[in-house]
Length: 202
Image (cartoon, rainbow, N blue to C red; front, side, top):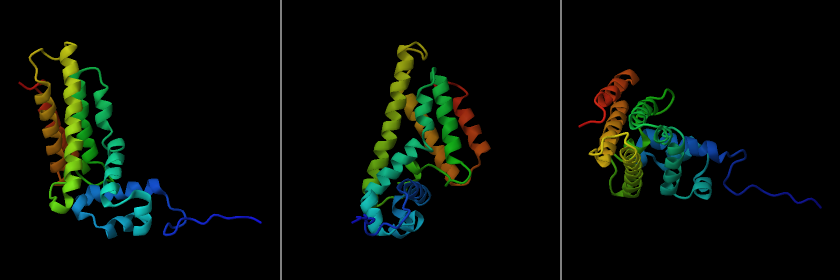
C-alpha cells in the first residue's frame, strides 16, 4: 500500500516561500508597515492568510523577515562598503549604494528601512522599534569601521567616528526620502558627491 503525503492545509500547490517573501518585502517597501494590509500582503504573495501565518508568522514576524531579506538584498551595499580598505572608499560606496538602492528600476523608490516607519502610529510601534534598531545597528557598524580607520591612521586621530557615522546615515536617509519623493538617480548622486567633497567633514 502506497502512502501519499498531503500538502499542509491552506498552502496552495507550488507555494514558493522565497518568492512570497520577496513579494512581501516589496509591499512593505512601497507601502510601509502600517500601509501594508494583510489583504495587500497575501494578494501580492499569492497565498491565503492561513498559509502566511503558517509559513511566516504574524505581520510583525513577516515584516522582520522581509527586513532581513532587504538587508541581504537591496541594502547589501552597506556590508560590501564596510569591507573596503579606506574610510573614504567606505563612505563613497555607502552613499553611492544608497543612491542606487533607492532608485533601482523595477523596485519601489526610497528605502524600506526609512519609509517603513515614517508614519507609524501605535499599531506600528513594533515595526518602528525594529527599524530604529536596524538603523542604529547600521550606524554602529559605520562607527566601528571609522574607529578602525582612526586606529590604523587612515583618519586623523581627532576624528569623531560616531559623528562621521551619524553624518553618513543622515545623508543616506535624506537620499532615501528624496528618492521616494521622485528625485532622480543623477540628482541624488550629485548630493552624495557633494557630501563627500570635503572628506572627512570637519
